[in-house]
Length: 171
Image (cartoon, rainbow, N blue to C red; front, side, top):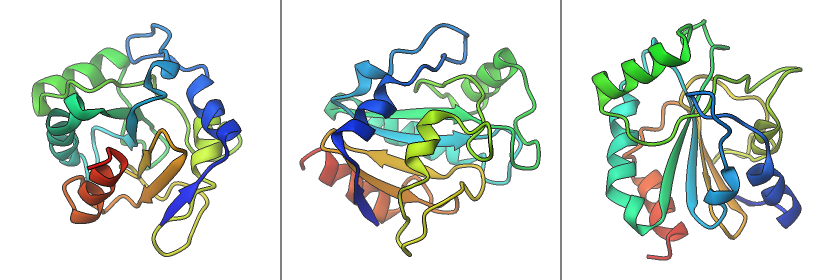
């Protein structure tokens, strides 16, 4: 389901403090004019092979304005227990990941990161908003403020994902 957030909410998403996986501050504001696919990721999940599809999307569309942003999270079955170095090594050597990754954060509960406070208010195709269900839930954020939510089992190369990316990129 396509939802539109207020300009204020969109600014809040891109002005939130977060660090990159290597611990350096991440400048989300630099992504403000891009189409961003935000995905909570994990290295030891049955859905982990989606990293391959996410990297393919990144490579296919990065020059046209898409950034895939991986957000490690250990809240689902403790499937992302590694250190930042272990996560980075796993992603690069196993799946050739080149897209940016944030520090490990919480996406649900009382310590939910502010980015996800905004994203979880967006409904999916069935009209359901709320907590992240599992690893690899995806949010496509367009510079116009339109956000499309895809649940974890929707593959990165699914027609609905690529169509939403194409639409957000203005194709």
